[in-house]
Image (cartoon, rainbow, N blue to C red):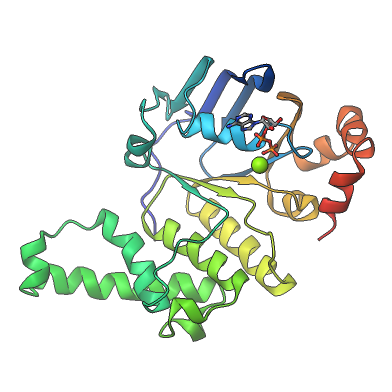
Length: 268
Ligand code: ADP
Ligand code: MG
């Protein structure tokens, strides 16, 4: 379904000593994070703790004040527009779908990023185009089925519910063939059934060898689906490791108990 990751144990995405200050605000203050291929890695922490800024540093949306970003062991591209060509795709919170196109066609727009026929082959409907088009549609339908959207493939994307749109956005990003898929609060506003579909997708991507990064408020979902979790508070990492390790960590309990806002947000 997706291209295999390169061999070896090199982390797919790594931040070393990341620092990003906004004036006097130490949004990110020395964060280390390492995300392996074939894992789902959660980033959690109270509101304003620096999760989104960390990811913006990793994807070069922000230039760091200090630290390094590595993609498969190599220095990440300097510019945010070059990062996707290294296989790192971030899905933002607000869906940007083609609402007047079918759900399946939206998935295919993701896939077109990695197709290899020329525009002339497409215009002339040459065999190379037709072959890839057929393969793309089959893969797109399989992905949609996985996301619980099979029955909607031929409807307009604009007719989907909020949660279905968000799932479609994730499917479309996956269809573009990334090696690292970053999801910014994907569970927000999803029903329980949709959250279950999202979990299925995340595990499926992981099993296909992707590195999945989840920034998430829904702690129950994160604990359920992640292999590794990095907990950030006030711009620094206060704990990292497997869910069971992180769940009982004193610094994590303190960060949560001291922040009723987070406990509330953590309730799905
Ligand atoms: P989180 O995603 O964990 O909620 P953020 O990374 O969005 O946290 O924010 C961390 C801190 O940095 C907050 O205090 C926030 O107000 C501040 N911050 C984030 N982005 C900017 C910005 N572009 N300019 C100034 N301050 C910012
Ligand atoms: Mg945020």
